[in-house]
Length: 465
Image 1 (cartoon, one colour):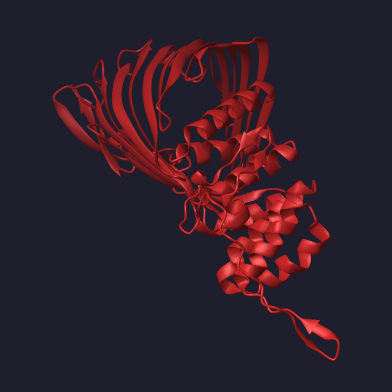
Image 2: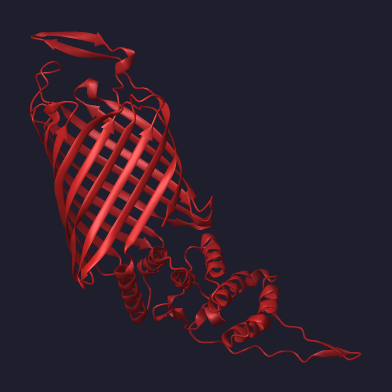
């Protein structure tokens, strides 16, 4: 693209967007010379001027720059008739709408362009400006982040974007994400995949057939979740973070209904532009089968640091005291240490990897265990407005003592899970976007009773405020 797409434009928060941020040849920094216009042909006093698409584009851009939007509009509409100028005409329409304060229209146009080609960095920056005009600061920050992680930005522009994101985050006092839908599930009770298990009586091993209540059951539940947070400034570098998570699954009857709420609060300190630390008190409550199942109280602390513009590393320690109301043998401490790294591998793709070690020090040694594992993931935007995230986790768990009824050796598990989430923010249903999630988990255990697998689908509508 040439012309306006190649010229510096003022973005919100004094943000300049020069053409070096562009992704496509023929986009250039310098303005090309305006193609000469052919002399008008006049017949019986009626004169007509024929313009090539390049001449039409140059004329439309000139009118937009001079803020003569009414005169530019028919030229932009005519430009759209030239297939090779479709992108330029759409951008000009969105840019003109933004310059006139119609940020809603501008955002719709820019989202449409990015849905077809998510690699258009300049368009993404203009979308961020429109989102700021609409007061949707979280969405604007997301667009700035994607543009920033793509790399190739001039140092001055990258610095201004970072400053703009700092301003957005300092002014963003709250967030709210909600979704609801249905979830078909092959194992709603998390039961064993085995039909028979071995029971130990001294030196004698007896095979025992399991009844239907102990086997995996399938079903479809209604699901919903909410994630909310508040950031309350205490000083220029310190803020109080308050985070709330709630989720629930409802099945026919109450036997397998599962609900969880969690609240965390504590300070965050920015050590520099690229690093921060935090500490929070955490409380959680779970209900299962229509009854209170457990509650937790503890703390988590951690920090993160950005390495260059494309990599972010985080470390978190989470320690909680669990009171298990269904079986006091599960009372005790759960402590986990998690390390994660994220890196932008393309303009709209982020890859992640992590390691973790988790310790359950419970009242019963047979239930106490140490788990070590790792995770990988990739996510981002695809053409047609599709967002996706794919994850995989593999871990090994070893228990402290045997369950003598099953074996004289302590239990050992291999645990694995994989997930894929697809969404489309281009499609809206009362402001909500559709998504589908595939989640598979499997546990292979030295004790057959604890071996299981589970496939869950989740069809939901989500909205991000």
